[in-house]
Image (cartoon, rainbow, N blue to C red; front, side, top):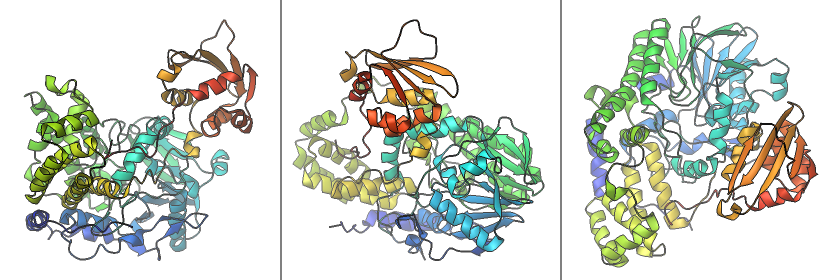
Length: 630
């Protein structure tokens, strides 16, 4: 039976009331902008897959009405109300967006013969539904081009919902993306994809019930769709800032912004329309420098400088700025002010964090101490609905200084389970710790209650009172969080403590993405899965001949490491696989079994048993690994 969430404690209710008084809720400009240009909504909003399963339903957020309840931070409630607005919107003449159909926005730029699509959402189903809504009100325009602004799955995964591989291959639909797009898009979803996907379930609250005591949004968008993820590689690569392209009569000038919000990212100016697509580098929130699901730390210094360049290049020639999330900003002066505020936000965090690093402060100390200046704090678009000042400052520290804070006591700490046992023993046993933690909980010191109760749960996972009080603590921390992803993490942790693990609802390492692994990326993906200790004594070699590109690789398993080389070899391998690049990538789905090889169309010569020996030492990831328990 599902657990009924509890009420907000008085400490949280008081915090919410104080925030409501302190923050500028009388400023309704964002509401006006979020509703401007509404053409039509999708009614009902639910989107289903071919089997009838719901992959997206924005109607589950209809509870976001009126003032915030005391179980939701009023600032996050306001943001969620804005982000939950769904439908087709006119941004400017010839520019339309469908918002509220996925975590991200899809944008349509009308050309001479058809329409260009920017960032086709996560799932084919939601992208197709958005295109259908656009066509219902703007006519049956053919898709004449697709643009990926960057390499995150919510900006390309639904591409086959708006076009087909056949139309792209025939040259009817160019696909435009920044340099190195495919490598980063595929690698992020495969290499650490299992761990990222499991943590993303917490980050987006995918398994949480929608409602004032559950999931209310994720700040950047409401949540992720759960449909079919696809990928069509780019046919036109943007490599330099200032590169100009014309597709279907639409003139575009590109700005390269690598290593900002994504490792491969670009912004787009439409000079004839006086419009700017800021991709995900300028949105109505403080973004992540390190996502809670995990990623490589982003560079706030490069991000800030990229936005300065955006202002210099396009500020004077822009009357509307729109992004791949949230709502547009209109008016040349307002656009520049918005870009300057976003620029200063990342620049301030970067520079001030380094200032304090060089005074000996640690990441956690900086995160606790550093505040934004009033001019930034009072701008709604700088609030930490998706990223946060706290975890972004820790990310900057990590980027420059790594995991170690210089204190020798932190150099060789016990892992959580062993540390938990020792803490609990030192503090008088689990029952005594829970009693003391209950006092902290009742005093409103939820951060400390979470710290000590976490030790109890790791020391004694079956301690019912400890689990329940930790769940209650996470619940209150979630209620108080302004950050949508923090709220989802806390409430997801409470849910799993009470009801068990819910796994990974959305898996982005889809077959269509895996199919675009290059040979070397595939070899890396296999090497990551080698169980080193089990493979210590194994020795084998495999040659791979790719007939369509006339390439040869030698794979060796030795000392628990799978290595590869393209150099010519003087000795024969144990076995040789002859195939094509596309068939080789199919092995990531089909497997190295005789049946998998046959289905993939791979020819085997030599000792075929080496493939089963290799398979025997593979240790794939676990999409349901524990997070809040050992």
